[in-house]
Image 1 (cartoon, rainbow, N blue to C red):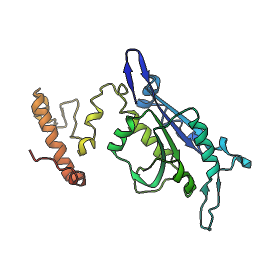
Image 2 (cartoon, rainbow, N blue to C red; image 1 turned 45 degrees about the vertical axis):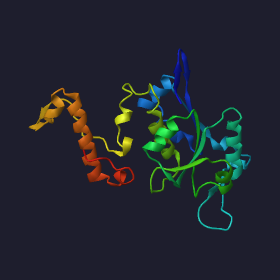
Image 3 (tube, rainbow, N blue to C red; image 1 turned 120 degrees about the horizontal axis):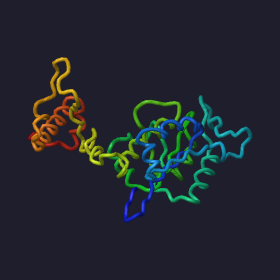
Image 4 (cartoon, one colour; image 1 turned 180 degrees about the vertical axis):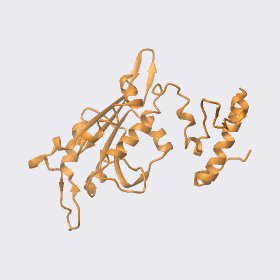
Length: 242
């Protein structure tokens, strides 16, 4: 969570446990996330799980008990890493990125953005030993109904979606509030210069300067777009038609 009182800034800290930390070098070194780190609003640390194993050749996975295809991330290295990090950081959530977790959405991103310290665990192979999930994980998150080679890309998605919500990260802090999925609506159409291109004109209402009418038009467009493309978003929280 970002707090600003006088000259006091508290940075959101996100630690990520990974078997292949090099995969996460680029996503956090550019654009909005780099700006957040440079401003001291966000700290992202990638921890190499192999540094916490006691097995030879930095082994962190083994065959599953009971047989079957694939490998399983071992309990001991993960617990060693988690408990070592917990000695210096009190985590609000310990999040496991997994295909069978709760589907990530904007509301969950909003919730996580209010926290101070998050620990993300990137799964690999056939997953992690269930005992880690039973005793350490507080949230299990999926970014969609598909399987990736590992949780690193999912972790990057979480950090990006959470980080941009921290006050002060975006130049215009109201921008995040008008994103798609805020209030269960998709964002309306947007336009910029030139006003006319190949005979395609920007809607007149956006050029008139009447902000009340513009806001009304945008709400109507958002509702229409949501009804056409994602009607499921309106089922649980229906909006009035006018």
